Length: 310
Ligand code: GRG
Image (cartoon, rainbow, N blue to C red; front, side, top):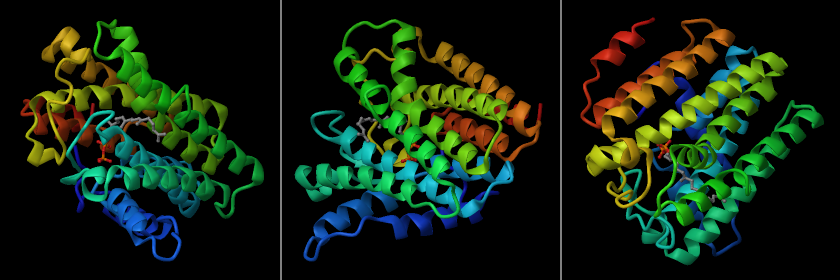
């Protein structure tokens, strides 16, 4: 599921990586161990989807790129913080992340937790000092990210998974948890891009609906990869969902694939109302779904045809 480094977004990806390197929180003298954990987490080779989406939304709405990059990087900092926590022995107990040892494996659980909290808090500081944004827009940005992280967002969704995921759950309950633990950061990336660019309420509504569908599709693709992918190819543990009540466990692989198609189709329809049929985001969504299918050994033909434009 990776945007190609020499693909259409390569220039943006380079800018994102450079900015993330600048935004690693400053540490006290002698605390290089903490800095190393944050660098290993934030700068490891992830797909950078959330900052990419924030930047493309803002640019294609005519907004300022530098501000959008900072907003997107703030989301990526929260994402990195959440991956550290998710991998801990008390949660997913993962060993591998982005092709490298999980942060607690390389730096210890104590430092991993501190690195996560430091990046999480710094993300809000980044939003609070974005240059060229009115105070109202900065406040709105902070509010959007806070809602994505808190008890109704990532934290709430993770709690639903940890406490409810080992017992039977309805498809609706699983979808609700997926929307919070995974969809929330896609939503905040889109909303931050829209805020930076001063999108109209109508554009924001359609973009939010797009992000919600994308988030649901993305978590289902992630669940399929957990079942079928090669850990060396995706750079993280697989089989962590064994015994968990996921949509795949509930309805099987084929029906899950059909649900993915449905969510992707709905996401693209919302996108089209804002950016027309041939947008950069549409191409990104198609390439994501395509590479996820390939990564899970799926026949990619149908989507290849589809992404060759509807
Ligand atoms: C307080 C920040 C914070 C979090 C607390 C631990 C937690 C609650 C939530 C975990 C949420 C989580 C990790 C959901 C999974 C989302 C997901 C599918 C991640 C994989 O995203 P990719 O594929 O990863 O974009 P890369 O590595 O490419 O960035």
